[in-house]
Length: 325
Image 1 (tube, rainbow, N blue to C red):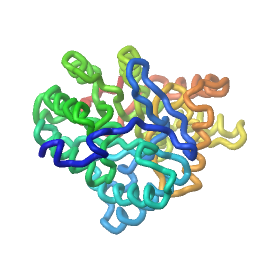
Image 2: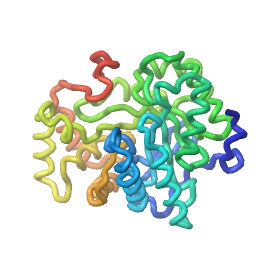
Image 3: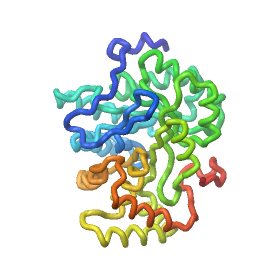
Image 4: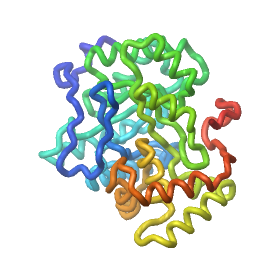
């Protein structure tokens, strides 16, 4: 499918422009025009594998709720098999809010493992753009480097074509290791602007963070609340520390501390919920943006020490083959 067959505002993608109703600060990298809200609403984990009725109601309503609350960064993926539902929500959002335009939303999607061959990249991204009703993507990621359906750099070159043709503004990766990033950096025309990975105090990814910072790649984290929602037993020392800190502070809880740990370490946090009250709690964590406050320094020091160097991975365990650095 040629680029000309898909209309996207005349082939011109517009830079993301925060709207007055946005409640989430942005972060920029140093060497390009890449700017992204530091809190993103994920459309995957909570609805992955849900039946069609749940996707059409809960997911659509949740995306609309997130934007209404001021979270204008929407994180999607081909693998989630729900982008048409997210697209219906985006269409309704823009139709119901005359002052809100496409460029006020930051929309990310990810190429599934089975779509990594160059020809498949082009066609699958065109379908993603159509399903999401967005005209172009603000950010396109490779969902994972695993499986090797084709050389990683071949996938990357196809993504670069989409940037050059105006269908994608920025490109990056997800779940990529240092060696994967280095492979892309060695041969890329457009450098990756982001690596979205599992990250939390029980998997701080310190070596990866150092590499990304040295190469001006912003890290985004998913699984931010995993220590308290999915692995409480394994994270008992961490969770005791979080509870102890929260008990001494007013108006914060363990989830707030985990999100502040991410944001004050200059990472973008991807999270999700179907409850407006919980999303409002998440928004409290972004009031100081990526600025490191005195409380952050004190709290993060306790949090970093709590696991005693014992870390674990909850996603892609087999593919990473024990790598937890």
